[in-house]
Amino acid sequence: MGVTIYDLAREAGVGIGTVSRCLNGHPHVSPQTRARVLAVAKRLSYQPHAQAQRLASRRTNTISVIIPSFTNYFFVQVLQGVQDQAAEVGVDLILYSVSHPAQIEQYLGRSLHRGHVDGVLFFSMKLPESYAARFEQMHLPLVLVDAFHPSFDSIRVQNKEGSLAATRHLLSLGHRAIAMINASLSTQPAQERLAGYRMALEEAGLVFRMDRVVIGEAGKNDGFNREAGRESMRRLIAGNTGADRVTAVVIASDVQAIGALEATRAAHVRVPEDFALIGFDDIELAQYAELTTMRQPMYDMGQLAMEKLTKRMKEPGAPATLTSFLPDLIVRRTCGAALRAPVEGTALSPQWEAEASVPTA
Figure 1 (cartoon, rainbow, N blue to C red):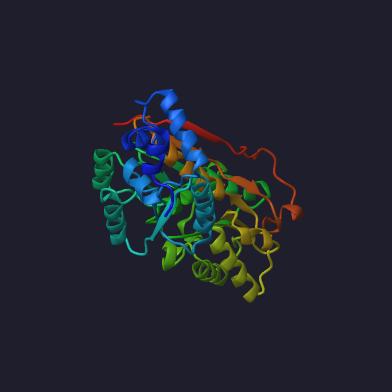
Figure 2 (cartoon, rainbow, N blue to C red):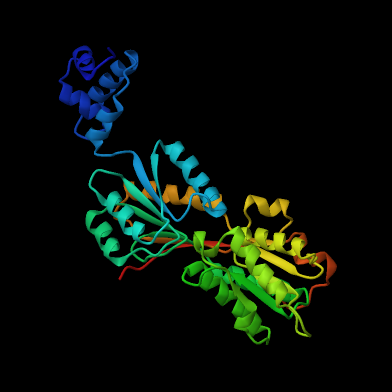
């Protein structure tokens, strides 16, 4: 049997209550007594029982991660950042993959069960207001990633501005007939990326045409998938005839862009000579596909989310914060930049990150 707090109490000449207070950092212990107890604990190589520690601190050292998909390349890289930071601070993860909207409330409800977890990371979905109120009432730490709520710490990517920069880049290369392959417009990222694409066209004096926006069949991940990208590009190629044929495409995610590249090869369409392509995310596969894309700091977002949640556990009354990332343009082969001279007056903004307090309602 290992060393117990009874052994520590006997050796240090104090009661077990004093030993417990010393080990748990209780302020109502004299420095001399604390030093004596800790010295005895070190000499006897005392190892506290993990479950007993949790009960004493009322902490589970566990957090919930509620996320749309474990298989999406974007989330895989974000989760790596979460996992590495969680390991650093000694926290375990309970992962909930949402495949149906009804599961959102189900998993939030499980997380709110008292004593189940110490906090929640909630990814890329709209937080139901009824649950926002419950989190506030129970003072359970919550951090939103790729989403926003004024009452909670949020980390988001500026999707609109990223898509605006991607479209501006194609315009700077001389393209004027630019299409877009998007995912389900029921999702906020798809809506925002469409808005950025449209804004870039209109500021260049071009007419926005919805018939040049190809919406992928939803399927898994709301259409942010390889198959949807492949089918969308097939449809675009099949209808791309006439004098005003499309010469460039902005694609709402890299995984869709990988599917789109498969469709161009099958149709013997050259990239970037016939179609210039830009994706969004900069997943690992993008580099091997030589895909020009808008880079999101996915790993950093996951790591920061875990850092914010840990800080929120320690400072529950601090003001909610918003950290916002602007995607960075990564130029590779598929946009055809090496084939064209840029048009003047279309400089891109640099990447930036800003954090500010969010006023609560």
